[in-house]
Amino acid sequence: MMDEHGNQQQTPEGSKRELSGQELIARVVEREHAADPAAKKEREEAYNAYVKQVTPAYSLPLHMVKAFFTGGAICLIGQIITSYCTDMRGMDPLTAGKWTSLILVLASAVLTGLNIYPSLAQFAGAGVLVPITGFANGIAASAMEYKKEGQVFGLGAQIFSIGGPVILYGIFTSWVLGLIYLILKWIGAA
Image (cartoon, rainbow, N blue to C red; front, side, top):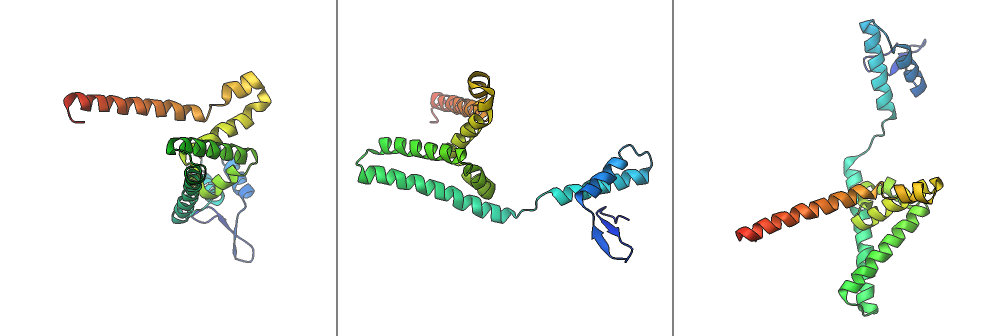
């Protein structure tokens, strides 16, 4: 029988065992349209036990540390590229920044194509969402996903399905901030 959490069963020897996901699903399905309140409660307990069983446990501090160091590493790589361009190649800072952006976008797209970037995202979470590399990954992933549907209706129509909202809200936020700045300038506060 299930305990108050709905995820253990008494065996003939008297010890408790964990129910498998399939057993929990079977209990939920067989009590799907139950009218009896006890059966409804048992269904809810089995469902909650199944959700608890399949939901991955994670440590927020560990995820934060991984995100911090991975994002920091990406930014460090960007700074190394910029420093190399300015110091070793003699570029002005604006040109070095353009080359840094270009190299980071290219690296992100290539790593997405090689299925390395998604693994890195799985490990580091938000740490790989450094704006330029995360955006390049989103565009490259959409391109790879929809290429099988053809050049026009697949790739052409769907390539910005992930990046489109970023562009939209980026432009909208810039417009709102520009309007606020203009108003502040008119009243003499800026």
